[in-house]
Structure formats: C-alpha cells, structure tokens
Image (cartoon, rainbow, N blue to C red):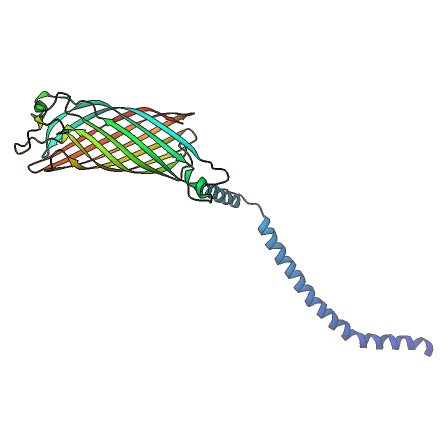
Length: 318
C-alpha cells in the first residue's frame, strides 16, 4: 500500500490514544455533577409537591384550626368595631314544686306550691373595650335585680303540719327572696351569645321555714320581722348556644344571712336551675327544673327546707 495512504491512519490512531484518557476523565467529572444535579432536583421537586398537595385530611385539619382561631378571636374585643351599647334582658318564670320542711331530720311540713321567679339585667356592653381602646378580653359589667316567691305551701296531709304555722301570720309558711348583684360577663359579646356570668351582691329573704319549734326560741308570733333576714349572695350563670336558636342555660346562687331577727341562729340557702330554650328573635321560650334549699341552725334544733320542681317562662333580650 502506498505510504501516502498509511500516514493518516497512523495519525488517527495516535490522536485517539492521546485524547481518549482526557475524554474519559472529563466524562467522569461531568457524570458526577449530573448525578448531583438530578438528585437535588428530584428531592426539591418532591418537597414542593408535598407542600402544595391537597388532601382531605389536611383540609379538615385546617378547617378545624380556623374554627379554633375564630373562637379565640371572638373572645377578644375589637375597639374599632365594638361601640358602647347598653343592653337589657328580663325574664319571668312560673314554678310548680313540692316543698318539704324538716326539724332535726323529722318532716314537719310536706306539700306542694306554685310560685314565680323574676329577674332583670342591665349590661354596659363594650364599655371597657371602647374606653381602653385596645384589644382586651370580652368583659362586660352589668347589674341585676331579681326575686323569688315560693308560694304558699299546701299540705298533703293536715296531720303533718307543725304548730309553727298556727303561731305565725296566716300567709306563712313561705319563702320570698330578693337579690341585687353586680355582674361580670366573660367571653360573650352580647346578651344573645354564649357566655359565663359571675355575680356578687346582697340578698334579703322573708322566710318562715327557718322558724324554730323549740320552747327556748323567742315568741316569734309577737315579732313582725321574725322571718326576715339579709346578707350576701354569690352566683354564676352559664349560657350556651347549641345552634343559632337552641341552647341551654344554668344558674346557681348561694345565700348567706349576716343579719337575722335573733342572734341565736344562722341561716344559709342555695338556689339552682337548669333550663333549655328556644329563641325567636328577641323572645326566648324556656323551661326546665329548679331547686331551692334553706337551712337554719338554732341553739336547740336545726331546720331545713327543700323545694324542687319545674319552671317555665319567657325572657326578652333587648
């Protein structure tokens, strides 16, 4: 073969032998970078997709968290929106009950009665938040006046009626109580919102059930104020809406007499009610159960009264 045709082959082989190691080295370098780049891209892409992926579980979790945030925000005032706005609610409830009086554990009166409970509250809604001018817990101040009349006891059996009834005025035995309190409403933004109310104030009662049968007791029939007592009261009221028009309400009062007709006895009482309600605009129809107890401790004996039954009535929310 002529020499002119062999030289290109030689030079080609020489170039391949010389450049091949360099090409392989560069390929290995680029391959490492490519693997790193691809791996980083895959990881980052997966992270981004996981973060933006819509799932039913995550949607329910976000929805529940949003609800909790909304509930938390409603517990705080917004001075830019919440303006001072007085509110009023008033209620009248009729009661039907059984009444029982005991002296040293023995029943002396046992019967039924019909009475009533009346109550009115005035609220200085948004007074605190509008004056402070910063976000605060929804706390509103109010005033309350109320009264309870147990009604006259109608004995089931005349033989169980004690001698006390014969020695005191004809409109007894009965229990009539009034209270006047300063109220603090927590969390609720208005009178038609779920809320907790704390109360403290004064009470007065005209309660013949506290009277003693003991011969050591004063001649009560000769004293017109023998059944009168006064003192302090504390209480709480919880209102919870189940739906926008249906809810439950509970009230508890504790009475402690600090002034009684005679200094030789003490008098304490409690009252509680549990109501369900249906609301139509500003009118609330409510009904449930209630219980009232009184206890008097004399030097020679102890008297106690239990009144429990059903209660129903209306409330206006203005």
